[in-house]
Length: 156
Length: 156
Image 1 (spheres, rainbow over the protein chains, first blue to last red):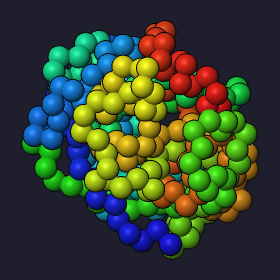
Image 2: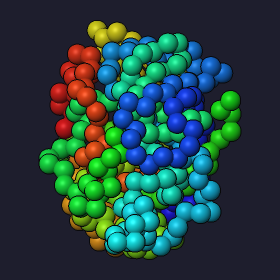
Image 3: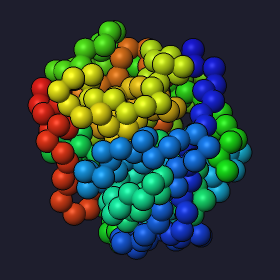
């Protein structure tokens, strides 16, 4: 039923920030989302500067799709944790290798979006940028298993 | 720099919920995210049931990519609002036609994820499903322009 592929074209890329995988301490990491000047002009981000935060969809391009495990595995490979399925992870080894993150928008300079807290490596292809609106936060209280809280304890 | 396309393969689709575009009143709309049984087994969602909310990436497949405007336009076509660029909108007319939403996970039944509050039309291709973790909420207070708050006043 879902066999047709969808060809997406990156709208830009991450410039600066981290160049290698480090799992924790993403708080205040600064980078630039550089939108593609061959596809867009500065009018594409008109008004975006009035938002404090962005929502960003990017590609985990360091991951080889052939290495995405089919079977459940423990979070971060922790041998003391119970295995969970590929869709119960947030990590990069996942079908379609999509990352979704909120980040702070510090400044808009033409097609350069200066951001903080974006947990994407330098060079990562950007597939979409949206303003973050408070109304899109989860409705009703959020609960999560203890392993997820433990795993995230030093992430930001 | 970003000319290579990325072929994504839907991991499932939305079944049920709304079948036509209605901009407001998405609260409590129920639907099923049906993951593709040709690609996955129930082990792909092992452990997901311990999360209250999901983050979902989907395709606005009703939109003709050729109709995505290049120029700024007012939110929802409101003639009294100032035009904003394509990346300052959250609507479906956008490059790559990607939607990102949080929704409540009500139940997991094999590869069927029963959800509420998902603002995606029935039949929409699903490109990724992740657990929502509280630590991925925006850091620091969120601010947004008045037009965005007004636009969202009846969304959920």
